[in-house]
Length: 336
Image (tube, rainbow, N blue to C red; front, side, top):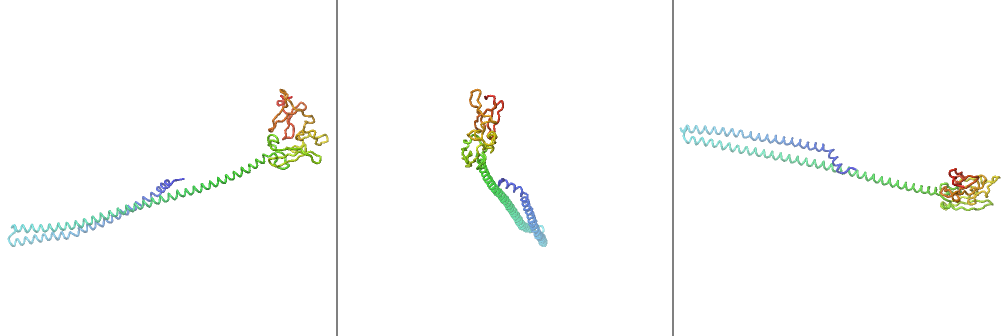
């Protein structure tokens, strides 16, 4: 987000040409005013000087008249070369000089007054121009400042709106994520149950024994037939199946049938009623370890299970497939 100073400098750069033009206009106007005033006062000064030319001529003429009058009088009196004649001529010259000096002073006084008025007027024009320039600069600086403030405020407001929108988006995202997690939790919770629906088959994803997973199993009889009831204490669901039916596949292993094709309870381990105690009619016996003679065990799906032997081969019960799987030669090498 740009700062006030950034926008101020941007506005200054943008409008500097306008400022310079306005200042230049003041200079042009000032120059024109000063020329007009100077021309006007110079004209007045020249006219003032001209106005005294008649007075100077009149003074000069009066000097000549006075000189002639003195000369004529002196001649009539026969005193052309007398001291009186020279005195009279000196007086005439002095009168002329005094009048001329008076005219010079009067004329110079008026010229000086006009020159002073001109200087004063030019000074006022310069002061006015300086004031105008100061006002123009202040107006431009105020404009730059106002525009910069407006732009910076707009950025701040936009950022606030953006921030608010982002916070709202994050809040919604958080809520959606929490909702998703809650749903996923419920799904995971449901998926973690061994029995997810009443009379549904048992899940094959659990590890360990049914008891480890909160499932109780008990046998019951109805109408002379045996049933196994599976109760999931976590989900609150339960499943009831006829003896011999695998709770994992819903099928009956063929080694549980008698020759007539009916379920024979004696062919199953009593603990669950669906795992055959024989393999294709041959009774299963516990396999032993050659090294110790102990019952051979194998952990499958988190449960330690007995390895069984029939017809010289070794088998392991896979509840998920509801059948025995034969061990390889390598797996059976240590068994007897």
